[in-house]
Amino acid sequence: MEVGFLGLGIMGKAMSMNLLRHGFKVTVWNRTLSKCDELVEHGASVAETPAAVVKKCKYTIAMLSDPSAAFSVVFGKDGILEQICAGKGYVDMSTVDADTSTKINEAITAKGGYFLEAPVSGSKKPAEDGQLVILAAGEKALYEEVIPAFNVMGKKSFYLGQVGNGAKMKLVVNMIMGSMINAFSEGLVLAGRSGLDPSVLLDVLDLGGIANPMFRLKGPTMIQGSHSPAFPLKHQQKDMRLALALGDETATSMPVAAAANEAFKKARSMGLGDLDFSAVYETVKALEQPSQKN
Ligand SMILES: NC(=O)C1=CN([C@@H]2O[C@H](COP(=O)(O)OP(=O)(O)OC[C@H]3O[C@@H](n4cnc5c(N)ncnc54)[C@H](OP(=O)(O)O)[C@@H]3O)[C@@H](O)[C@H]2O)C=CC1
Ligand SMILES: O=CCCC(=O)O
Picture 1 (tube, protein in one colour):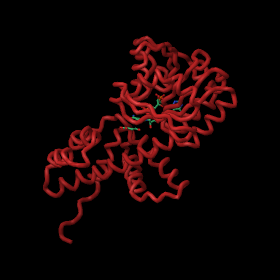
Picture 2: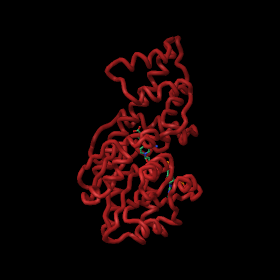
Picture 3: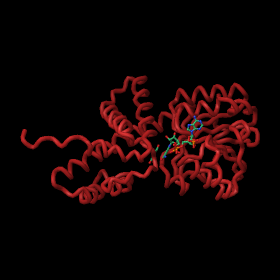
Picture 4: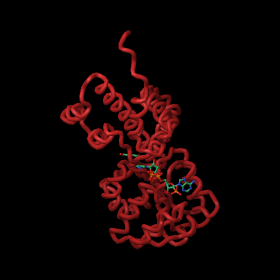
């Protein structure tokens, strides 16, 4: 199977590498073209523009940073719309909001193409290991045609119906995750300031009812103050912002998520946006220690 792949950031690089490893013919494009070199070493072809990828491939997958990037590769000069036509499919796996996906779907289908949104749960390591959870919605026929690629990139694919449902599911998941990492950060700092060993807290948490892979994976590196990016904090803040907008649309009160978003914004203002989202811990640590006198 031949596929195009747009966007070779942390996730796109790992996902396209996986496709190559499993025998797919992959044509890649990235805004910063030099990032294609490593994929070429592993057998990929390169195209100069998103339009050139679509011209060459029946199916094109994208994994881009945010709604603005997703729009840019579709509607911009040399973008997808210049070549998409009947018989070609476009699969956007970026995390965006339902409105962005809907507008892209309308533009692609107006040209006769097929569209599927397919954001993913799981980070750098699951992407490298082909263990993502894929949240697809849109054209069912396209979903069925690209299942071989999803089976290589992920451990489970959900088909969620109409365009927008994949984006919404992904934002709900990341809203929960963003709130959890904030509560976890506060717990680690509270333990330390209460004279407890945060490492022992990790052991206690891991044996109880709120044990989870995220605490297990991030806890030790957070305690060390190491936040090498797997999921950049700026993207987590984007997801909180989009989830809160979904809360506005549906009149859903989310005070916990709103507070978590403020912490991610604070982290960005401290220059931590390109670090892992676990760096939100540093904002809690940075807050002045309360006076013991009162
Ligand atoms: N990292 C993670 O753990 C996960 C991330 N996601 C989501 O996946 C998407 C990608 O994440 P990730 O790989 O971590 O992000 P990165 O920041 O590592 O990569 C972003 C990619 O988007 C490209 N890009 C950014 N702006 C534009 C633009 N205007 N036009 C064209 N290309 C652009 C970048 O190109 P360039 O190289 O030129 O900058 C790069 O290829 C995001 O939506 C994120 O929320 C989902 C699940 C997990
Ligand atoms: O969007 C990023 C999700 C990261 C994860 O699921 O661990």
